[in-house]
Structure formats: C-alpha cells, structure tokens
Length: 334
Image 1 (cartoon, helix red, strand yellow):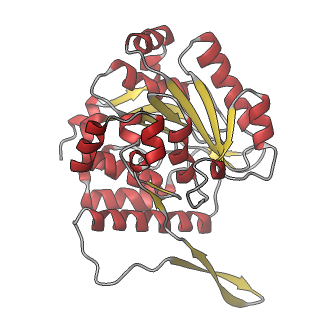
Image 2 (cartoon, rainbow, N blue to C red; image 1 turned 180 degrees about the vertical axis):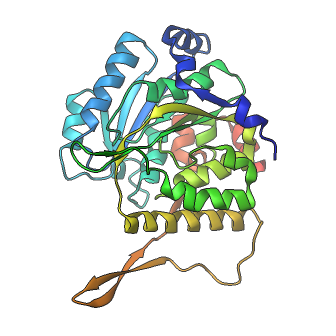
C-alpha cells in the first residue's frame, strides 16, 4: 500500500487560518462557494451554525456565497429558526417534485446540488455542538490552494455528549472502527488512510458530486468515498484535521442499524464494480430484539435502499446548469 498519500494529502485546519489568502484564491479562480446544511429536527444547534458561518465567512471574510438548509420535514422549529437567521431554506420534497420523494440525509445532499449555485459545495452536519468556522474554511483550504484536489473530508477527535454538561472524552467513530475500517482493510487498503471515512463534513467541486450516485440514507459517505476513489483515484482526495467535534450519543442498537446500512451499501458497490458475485440477494431487514415482560420480541428495521443517480443525468439539472453536450457525452463514455 502506498502511504505517501497520508503524508501528502493530510492537513490541519490551522494550515488555512489565513482567511484572506483563501478569499484571494477564490477570487482568482472565479469560484462561487455554497454551504449546505441537511436538517431534521436540529432546532438546538442550527441557529449557532448559521450565525457563526454567516458572520465569519460571509460578512467578515467573503468566502461563502450562500448558506442553504435542505430539510427532511422537521416537526420542530428548525426551518423557522434557519430562515430567521438568514439561511435559504428548502424542503427536500419540494425540489424536483415530480420525482418520488425519499427521506434521508443522502436525499438532502443530492437535492442541494439542484438548489445551490456554487462551483464548490461544503456539506456540514447540522448537529455540531461546538461549531466553529474552521469546519468550513478548513475543508475549503485544500480545494482552493491545490489545483489537483477535488474532494476533502474532515476528521477530528470525537468526544460524546451524554448530558447537558456531561462529556465522554472519546468514544465517537465506533462504526468506523468496527465496520468500515475492517472492510476497507480487506478490500481497499488505500482507503484506510482516511482517518474518519464516515465523517459527515466534506467539501468538493460540483463536477465531482454531480457525477456520482447518492444513496438516500447512512450509506452516502461510504459510497461517496468508494465512487470518487474508483472514478478519479485517491490523489484527488484530501483530509483535514478539524481538531474536535462534539456530537450526540447514539445507543448501540442505533449504531447497529447504521452499520447494517453501511454494510449493504458497501456490498452493493462491490457487486456494481464487478468485484464480487452473490448467489442470492441481500435481505433488507435488520433484526434486533427487545426484552419485554421477560420475553424477547423482534425489533425489525427495514431499509428500502433507494439511491439517486448522478444528478447530471437529470434533464432539469442539465438545463439549469447548462451542461455542455460534449461533457455529458464524456460522462456517459467514462
């Protein structure tokens, strides 16, 4: 395995703390940059994310051109708060409404490509408790200052919030270490150099995101890593240490369901790449058990496994972004 990538394409956010340098690079390359926040009931954290990004990276340093929230149908005040603080807010179901609607983070990220105007898209989860503008500029640094890098992932220390004022110093990233890293080690050792391949914060050029499919649910990060690696190779990818990210704790059963979706996504990608051949179809239900009145009862989690195609294949997208027919031909022949 070539580990030179780890040394060459791994950065620390402080490498890019000169924000005027990033603004100059953005201007010279004549780029527009969009920040997308996918949401579902994030009223506790959404305001702070928008306030910090807007004040630091739009008003003080003109790095971002827009902040867009794509919501999955929150039943709390997420959308009202986001609008109040100046984000452009859309319901995922209202975007390309002739398509069958799905619910999930991947759906929001995919539909954001139709709504946003940027040449570069920054995706940040909306539940970051210790949000800081480094989460955006750290990801943008490698894209703006290196001509060969097209996609950047975040990694960080991951303490877990277990109460209003309680914190575990470590424990985050359990699905990464127990599921995806063993899989990458077995089948794609080069990808193990991604310190946190499932991190929910990443940025990249539109020309990359528009050419890959997006699974609707938890599998979107896994497929994104594998598809970009397969199409363009590891050298267009980079990763940035964002120091520390505090997030909500999830119980073991929830992590089990997440692992189930990721495993299914991984195996389906392997089949699509022609690297394995299964005799039978995979089952779609994760079966867990609850102890109720001294009896074990099944608790079944079913996934439908929907996946959006590369958005460049959608006619409305090609028309809106004036995709050149020659570009489309090259994409189809690739």
